[in-house]
Length: 405
Length: 130
Image (cartoon, rainbow over all chains, first blue to last red; front, side, top):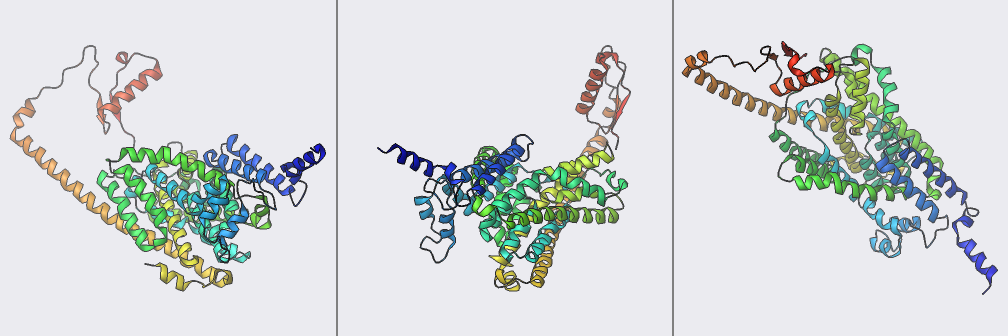
């Protein structure tokens, strides 16, 4: 046995050697980025349930996959390129992925097939009380207004040279809805999934920092002090009928929203109907946790250095922030209009909660309202636009999917 | 239902999208979201109005039933003596828009905060501040 030759082979097959060749330094940068994301998730508690998984997925893929690929890699960009190439024999072949893929490739099938985002929506539906929205349907206007950032960022992305499909995927970051962003991106621009998912979840976690300055800038102290009247009590029957009506109406309007809206409303029906408590409990807890594990780690896997470190990623990060800000502005502006039209009965701060991100955005409205007037309780009023934002972003995604697919 | 219309109205190939097309798609998309949610709002308002009127009818029927019972036995109601006071009590507390359970909780919290036994405190009335 030639010890020197064996040592050389071992060195050349190691990841440490790969850092020194073929742009391997990029993997080193991505490993550092994943450590920063882990720090933000664990220490700063920025969306930790997803960010820790995404960051660790990012770490794993950049430890195991280098520019030229590797048989030991957990995730293979080349396999997915073949999957998306109509001229390749493995086009749309999940069999090839199962046969040749690594662990993360197999988990990623759930993202690619749109299973995880839909199941997450089912859990969100089972955890959400739509009562505040049903008792005050005008909240839907705020949920619609807060989609402004989606379409402005879409326009901005086209101006910056992205294709329509890519721009649509970037724009949906403004919906502040992670599963919707992942769902749309896997269908329209799967090569951008990593930066878009990371931007979407990072900005959602940063809502308490992004929104308050805009809220203060666009509202007067008098407007922020408004105490809203308690809304009516919603009957059980109304809560049961609501998911059925919304599913029928929205899916008939935009069939492409069926996976998201259908699962959201099914989850909510299980919660409200009163005869499926076991299912509701499973969807809210066990299933949600399992899917979160798979989703986080497989989205993280799409951040291979070879694709992630590019000018496009920086553009996406900037456009995502723009989308978030304009969505907040859209909700606040319509909130101000409603304040005027209602004779000062509606606090415009609840408008910013129209950007989905349940319940973080509603909490921010509550906190800002209470800062202006300590006896102000806006949380339940803000939950209306907040859950309306979930439906609004699903409709926006459905529209973009219908146009660009 | 809308999909075919949207697809034909939009650009044929995403790669060829011009800025004007992008602007048009953005405005159209925002309008679709608004229209969709406005129609949903109207539907919810209609169902809400139906349930509100149903509740109002049920309440009116219950009130009528209660009034009927009251007129049938007015003497009994008038003759009903005031509830006896509990031993050591300083009198009844008047409640304005506050359920008994919440009043009991409020009294217990006040006693706890003041570090005084509840039977040494005299609550005159509890009113919800609106």
